[in-house]
Amino acid sequence: MLELPPPDPHIEFVLASRGYSKGLAQTDGVQALLRGEVEWRALTAAAQVKNVDSGASEAQFQLGVAGDPGGFELEAAIGYKRLTGLPSSADEDAVEFTGSASRAFGPVRPRLAVTFSFDDLGGTRESLYAEAGASLRLSPRTSISASLGRRERRLGDDYTAFSAGLSRRIGEHLTAELRYHDTARSARGDPYQARAVASLRVRF
Image 1 (tube, one colour):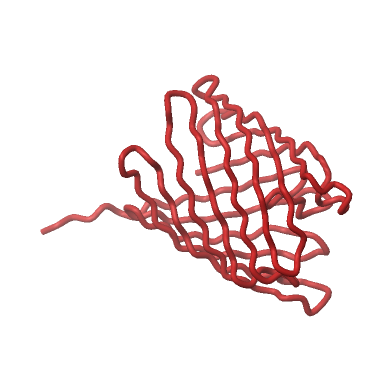
Image 2: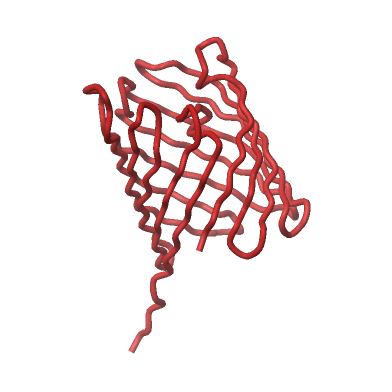
């Protein structure tokens, strides 16, 4: 009789001095994110919740698949996002498609990622965010990384975002990171302006 491997569950908690998504600030202050996921072979099912601006929370449910043909790490997923606690009747939910590809060349790992939604949250309709970046492993526990992203939106501002950071794994389950964020549209207001963000990630 064929014996299948058991599911591999994980739980993750992230505490950041400010929340960021797709290169833009999501909170005025601290953001807390809780994520649970179950992996089974190449399949992943995940759910997460985090606080965002205006006292609202964003929940997301995601199904994904991953593989590593020819040494490339490929991932694709479909997710459903919903905002709760909004003070207005803005668009509260969205379906999002994501894909990424990366490959290690010694200590260097370049990465490409794309996120698309036909009808994004709020007043935005189609939204496409493409990001290219790379990380460099300085030691078994320390790495630096940088990325450049571009977002095109219908009924929303287009912008280019940049980030660079240093991360350090502490012990078996804890990772600390300091990351700098900026965009080419700082005049659009606080979410677009430069900021250094510190975060702690615990994963089991």
